Image (cartoon, rainbow, N blue to C red; front, side, top):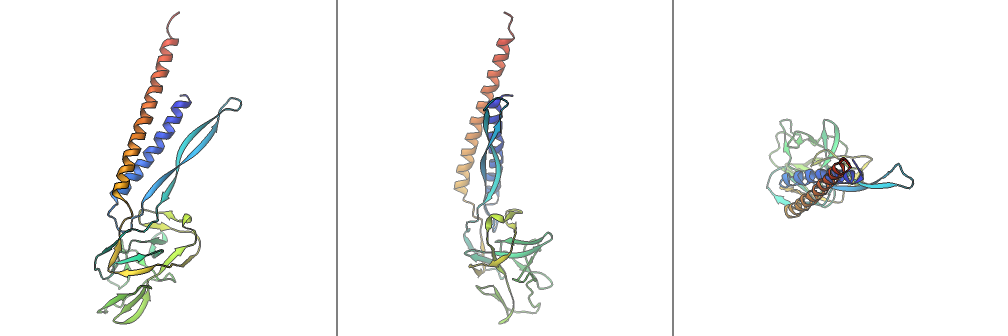
Length: 239
C-alpha cells in the first residue's frame, strides 16, 4: 500500500471516530447534565526511507468535552438541583469521588441525598449529605445549604477544579478530576435540572459534513486502488 492509500485511511479512521461522537451527542441531547463531546484532529509526521522524505497523516487522538452550560429546565422536583454558572456537584461513586452537573437527585431510605444511579451526593468535606428521615419540609438554598424544617442539616458541595483540562470524562455526565478542589462561583437552583448542552441543529449539520468528507475520502481510496490495479495490469502485459 502506498502513501496516498495510507493518508486516505488515516483520514477515514478519524472521521469514523468523529461520526461516533456526533451520534452519541445526538442520542443524549435530552440527557440531564450531558456534556457534548468533540474530536480534535492532530497532524502526525512520519519519516520515509528516503533522504529528506516524510509524509503528513491525520490522527483523531484528542477527545474534547464542551463544558458550556446547558439550559435550565423547571421540574418542581424536591431534590432536583441545577447549577447557575460555574461548578460541579461532588458525588461518591464506587471508583471514588466524581464531578457532575446532572442534579436529578433523590433521598434514599436512609435519608441520604443520592443520584439516580444511587451515588451519594457529598458536602465540601467529602461526607454524604444526610437528611433527617422525619423531615416534613426540605429546602436547598442557592449556596447549597440544606434546611430541614427550617434547620440547617448539611450543605451540598459546589466545587470546581483550577484547570478543567485535567478533567477525565467517565461518561457523558460524570468526570474524574486531578488536583485539589476549590469553591465554585455558581449558585444552586432547587426545582430545576440542567439539560444537555447539545445543539441538535449543529450536530446534524456536523454529521452531514462528516458524512460528505468520508464519502470523498472513500472515493479517493477507490480511485487509488483502481490506479494501482491498472498499473499492475499494464506492467503484467507481455511485450
